[in-house]
Amino acid sequence: MEILRNLRRRKLRTTLTVTGIVMGIFALTTMGALAEHFNMLLGGGITYYGSSIQIGSDTGGGGFGAGYMSLDTLSQIRRVSGVVEAAPSVQVLAKPGSVSAVNFGVPDYIMNFDPKSFDYSAFKVSLASGRWPTDSSRWEVALGASFASEFNKHVGDSIYLPVRPSDATADFINHRFTVIGIANKTLTAPDSGAFVSLHDAQMLMGESIPQGIRSSVDPYKLISGVVAFGKPGVNLDTLADRITNTVPGVKATKPSDLVSSFKAGGAVFTFMTTAAALLAIIIGGLSVVNTMIMSVTERVREIGLKKAIGAKTRNILGEFLAESTVMGLLGGAVGFLLGLLLTLALNGSDPSGGIFLITPRLTVIALVFAVALGAGAGVIPAMRAAKMDPVTALRAQ
Amino acid sequence: MATIQALGLTKDYGKGEKLVRALEGVTLTIEQGEFVAIVGRSGSGKTTMLDCMGLLMRPTEGQILLDGTDAGLLTDNQRAEIRSRRIGFIFQEFNLLPTMSAMENILLPLRYSHGDRKAAQRRASALLEEVGLAKRTHHRPMQMSGGEQQRVAIARSLINEPTLVLGDEPMGEVDTDTANTLLGLMRRINAESGVSFVIVTHDLDLAARTDRVIRLRDGHLISDERTSIPRAA
Image (cartoon, rainbow over all chains, first blue to last red; front, side, top):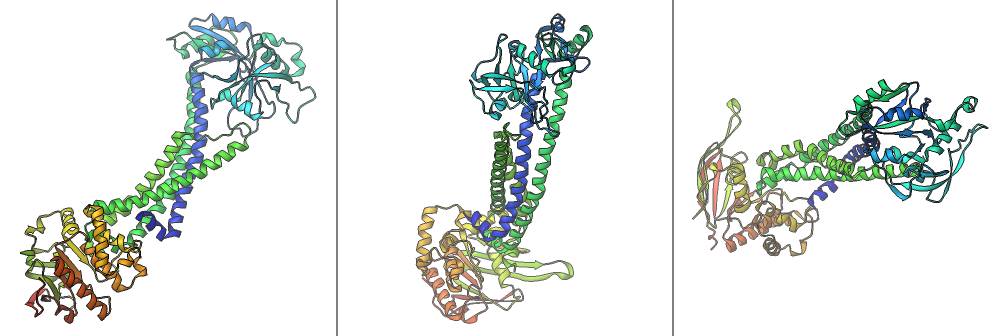
C-alpha cells in the first residue's frame, strides 16, 4: 500500500517513468511476437528439412523453381544405396502473381499429398477435420489451417484453384475442388498449403507451363522435385552427395545446408528481439534510475526517520527496490497488454492469420524482463538510500 | 537503576585543521523513570549528545551503556534493533510520513521490530486516546495542526514500549500553550509508564519543569542539577 501511495504522490513523474517502461516492453513484445512467429516457422523448416533430402533438377531446382524432372528419376533415386523412400513432389503457387515484393512467410502453395512422405518425415501434420486426399482422388483438396481461414473454407465447401489473380491473363485456368480435410495449425509452412492428389498436382503444374511449350510435354510424366528419406543411421549429407553423383540431372541439397540457412534466418529475428530489449533497457531503465534517484533525494528525512526508529540497511534497500520493481511490473503489464492488443488487431486484419505470435514464453520473458528492469534500475538509488547516515539524513533540509 | 550511561563521551567532527570537538569527556547517567532536560546554546553539543545516546552516532571516544550493554560493541544492525525496541524518538519537525494516517504513522516502528501487530494496533488506539487524538485516527499529517502532529509523534515513540524516549527540541515548532500541553502530556506518560525521557531544549522555562537539568557548553558538561519539581512516582 505504501508503495502505491508513494508512487501516487508524484503522479506525473511516475506516469512518465512507467511510460518509458511501457514503450520498451511494447517494443519487446511486438518484435518478440514477430520473432516467435518466424522462429516457429523456421523451427518447422529445420525439423522437416533436417530429416529429409530435397532433390530438384540440376537446371533449376524443385519447389517453386522452373526446373522439372522426369517421373522416371524417382525410381533411380529409390535405388541409391541408403535411401529408404523417395516421394515425388509437385508444387505450384496457389495465388500466381500475388507474391508481393515484401513477403513475410510462406506464399500459399498447392502440393501433392504423399502419405509415405508424411510417414517418414520427422515433422507431422495432423487433421482438424476430414481426411487427406488419396492417389485416386480427383478434384479433392485438404487445406492448411491458414489457407482454410484465409478463404473461410470448411469440409464440404468448394474452392477454385489456383486462385484467380486480379490481373489474370486470358489463358488463366482454374478448377473447382471440394474441400475434404482441414489440417491443424502448425504455425509453419503446411498452414499455407493446399494438398491434392499427385494426378491433380501434375495437372495444375502442366497448366502453369507457358502456353507455347505446354502442348509438347506430358505433365503426368513430370514432377518438380523429389523428397528422399535415409535409412536409420545413414548420414543424410553424405547420402545427398551420393544422390547428386549417382543420378544424372538432379541436384540433392544437403540437409545441413538448409538447416544452416534457416538458423541464419532465425538469428536475424533473435537480433531484432535483442535490439528491442536493449531499447527497453535504455528508455525504461534510465527513466527508473532517474525517478528513483529523485525520490531518494526528496525522501532523505524519511529515510533518516526510518533508520532512527529501527530500519536496517536491508529494510530501506527492500522498500526502495520494491517501489522500482512495482514501476517495472506496472510498465511491463501495460506495455505487454498494448503489444498483445496491437498484434491481435494486426493478425485479425490479415486474412492469412498474421505474422505475430504471442507465446507463453514471450509473455513470461516480457513480464520477467520488466520486473528485472525495474528492480535492476532501482538497485543503485536504493543502495544510496540504504547506506545513508541516519543523523545526516534526519538533519537534511 | 540506570537506563542509559554515558562514560567519557567525546565526539569529533572533521579532521586536521577542520576538526571540531562537539563533546569532550561527558559522563552522565539517566535513571529509570527520570525526566531530564539537556540545555545549552547552539553548538553546545546537546544534539550530538542526544544522537550518541540514541545510538544514531558512534562517539569518537567513550562508552554508551544501555541497560548495561556497551553499545559500542554492537554492529549497526544490532544498534538498529535496539533503537526499534528500546528507544523512542521525538523530533522538532515531527517527521511524520505524509502518505500515512495518524494510526499508520504510530504503527510504523512495528514494521522494523516485528512485534505482535494486533496487540500493537490495540496499543496504538490506546495511545491515540491517551494523546487526545482518538478522533484523528485516519487523518493524515497535512490535516492536523503542529501540536496534533507532535502528539502523533509522541504516540509513535511509545508504540514499542521503550525504556527511553529521546526528544530533540520536541516543542521547538509549536506555540507556548501547545508546548506546555505537550510537556504535560509527556510528563503524565512518564509518571504513568515509568519510561525515561531525555529532551533537548533551549527553553529554560520548560527545562525547569523537568526532574533534572543538564547544561552543556562547548561540549563540556557544566552543570547537572535536580529541579525543585517532585519526581514522578
